[in-house]
Structure formats: structure tokens, C-alpha cells
Image 1 (cartoon, rainbow, N blue to C red):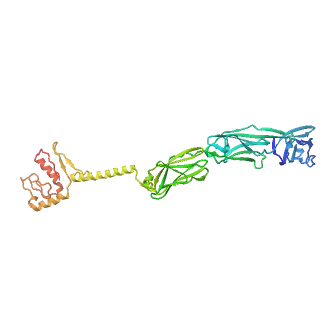
Image 2: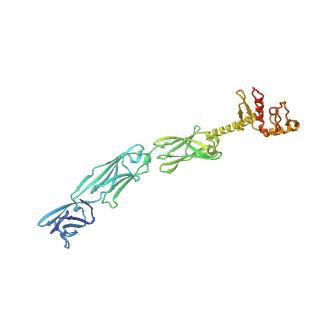
Image 3: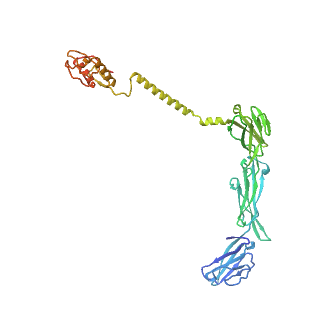
Length: 445
């Protein structure tokens, strides 16, 4: 089968056999009698001539200068080979375009469509060959949900001997608010259309009440100045508005006291800017709750607004959070505790980071604590030496003891030469051992 467009020019149809032929005979729809064609020979039918590679190669075909609807049907080509005729057949489909598609509304009122109502559309592309393919679009976006293609309806016209087909499709759609103003398109695709497709459009007009919004907060207002509070709502047709402040109603287009209510401003695509003007904004104004009621013939919606001044926004953005405050307090407490511990340790002489003490067991019941030598001890010794020069020598039999002595030390009742002060603790320990003392001795600075 071959599909050609009506009035298409230079259409070639070809039959072939694998051996030489003596005759090429053509039977063409729209031509009363069969006719023969050969290379380099005149055609007996106007507008048709031989097409192929030559009879010696078993090639038999015809070129149609311009296709008409009469040529639709089966073309037969017969080749005579060795006294036998062999026939081939080609189905010719002559395509012609259907009419431009049309849209009908089977259910609903397009002029007064409401949200959540159902509209049913029917699209027809009539009397084409073959039947057109129909598609639906909404603002160039394909629609698949709710589409029901119909069976093509066949037509036959005896005077012209034409067969044609009408394609159809139905669309059932639940209308949404966002459909308003959009373009509904029925598109028919056909090989015989000059651009391949033909379209018909409808603009949807959807009526709906003002659409709901969450609670709104208006920021950055300046105290003492005229403030304009506004929000954008969506509705069709345009809404009528009413503000309520502290139980007092303020209608659109009116001015009362410090409040003025302009008429809603159309912003396009069913959006409206609704505003309230407050002269000389005060702190008291910020504590009030502002209620807005918007309505049209299809419903009513209430909105709630709060106001915030510019100073509040700055304070909130620069403030310190609870976590930071708790961390700061803990850090201050830790520092104060550390400082207090240092002062207590210094006052009691219990420095945890002072030099380590040396504990020496004299006997099972005795212990001695020896602290490191301090420079202050040297100063005390020097003063003692000046006051009592005889302290450098201890005579036999005397038991004079000093905490630390840079002079001579008594050992076993004998006179010894002076030794460094660092040896004083050892001498004291020996003296106790020779004296056989069983008591505990604690020597500390």
C-alpha cells in the first residue's frame, strides 16, 4: 500500500520480476482500459509514462504526473514473460485533508463555568482520507486524562467516487481555578494538511471565589509614618473587600479616621492587590489583629494579618538566642569558680601545683615531711648569724637545734665544719635516730 496526497506530483509506482519481460501492461484506477508502457515509447494515456529500468531487467512501472482522487484503489502491473503473464498489485490511497477541526460543548456552560464543575468537549475533524489523529492541549501542554477517542465514521460520495472519514474525540474535564484564561486546543494531524496539523482553540473562563491564604505577617513598617498593608489574592470576578480593625469595619473605597481602603488593584491573571493604609503607625497598631474579608458572587474568604515594625525585625535579627545565653552564663561561672579556687589555695598555702613533698619513714610509727628550701630561709639564717655569732659552733654536750643552719652542726657530740643548708634535714633525722626518740616529728616551713 502506498499513500499519496491528492494533487501530489510525479508519483512513481513500480513492479519488478527477476527475468526479462516482453510486455508491461498497467491497469490504473480512474483509467477505463488497461494500457501498455515501454521505455522510449509514447504513452497512450495523458499524464502517465513508463517508469523503471527497462523491460530486459523485468522492470515495469508508471509515473503519475498529478494524482487525483480517482486514482485511489488497486493498480495492477502485468509482465509478459515467455508467453505467460505475471501480475502484481499496489493499493493506492489518495489522501485528502479533512475540514478544520471543530469543538462542541456537550455538557456544562463555558460562559459561566465554576470551579469543580465538569465540562465535556467534543472535537470533530470531518471528511478526510484517511481519518485524522486528534489530540487535546491546554496551553500547549498535552491532556491525557479524560480523553476518549471515537471510531472514525466513513462516508462515500458517489458523484466523486470518494471515500472519506470523520475523526472524533471527547474530553471530560473537572474545571480548576488555574484553568481560567487558559487556551484549550483540539489538534487534528493529517498527512494532507499543508502544515501537517490543523487546530481550533477555546479560551476557558472559570469563575471562582477568592482563594484561601495562610495567616500573613507584614514586616518592616516604620513607627510614626503612614503604613500600607497589602496582600495579593486570587479571584474571578474581582473581589469586594472589607477590613475589620478592633471590631470596626472599613469598606473598600472609603476613608475613615486614620484608615483608608483603596479599591482592589487588578494585577492580571485574576490576581488582585488588596491594601489598607494606616496614618501615623503607633505601637498600639502593632498589637492589633487585622481581618480582611473578600467576596464575589461565587463565595467569601477571610484573611488574618499581623504587623511588625522595622525595629522589631532588627532586634530579632541581631538578638542572642537562648542557647548562646546559657553558654555565656556557664562560661562566666566556670571562670569565677576557677578564680575563687586560686584565691583559697593561695590563702591556705595549698597549691596543687607546688613541688612534690618527700616522705621518709623513720620507724614504723614515725614520719617526716620535708619541704623544699626557700630563699626566705637564707635571709632568716643570715639575720641569726649576725645576732648570735656563736651559733656557728656547738660545744660537746649541748643540744641546740635550729631549723636550718649554714654554719657548723653538732653531730654525736663532736664539733663539725659548716655544711650547706640543704644538708640540714638529714642531720635532723640522724640526731633523732641517735637520741632514740619514738615520737613523731613534723618539720615544715
